[in-house]
Image (cartoon, rainbow, N blue to C red; front, side):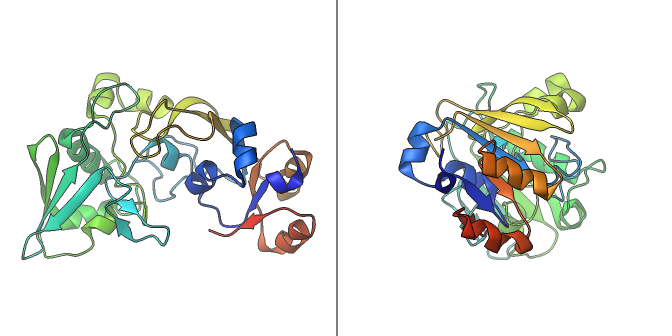
Length: 271
């Protein structure tokens, strides 16, 4: 693989980088993407724990209720909700869910999963960044139909779609109610299940997290990479050495090293 086929990332949204290759020839030739990160945060795979850091690997395993544009604005194009509307007083938000979306277990996603996920993200055990504000704001969550969720707030608000998108934290990620209730929180944290384009394969704490593409994702179809591996490489010098040798395809780097790597021919993507 040539240097120009590899990517250096400064501020990288990995869900985008992992699914948008540097060029068509590279995408056809390479089936595995390896990403070197300086930190995995707390290395927990449960979005409700340490969720104030939106971890890049989460975005591949889980879909959000509300999609976002590249600029971070709520979008009806990329989330599990195909559309939503607010009541005249902006205290009742109705979300219409896409039909036929399945978890990695094969179970179909419904409004009960959305309700369960949001309640879990707001629970007293949750450490997500916006659990507190959502507890204060949300009065009730109704499920009038399998493909419809109604969020009732205590006060008028305009920010509910933003709270449940990737723009802020992990509260909008939808988890499998049936899987977690059947297996428990600890089992879920060891082997998480979502509806994202990649599913969990293995985690070695302090080393790596490996994911594999689902056969056909509702939003992306067949992913361009069969596997994505996130490697924990705290030292920047080591990350750059791995990049130069072609042992990793993507690495996060500091501002100070950008010009040096650009002179060597590495593409730098700012996100």
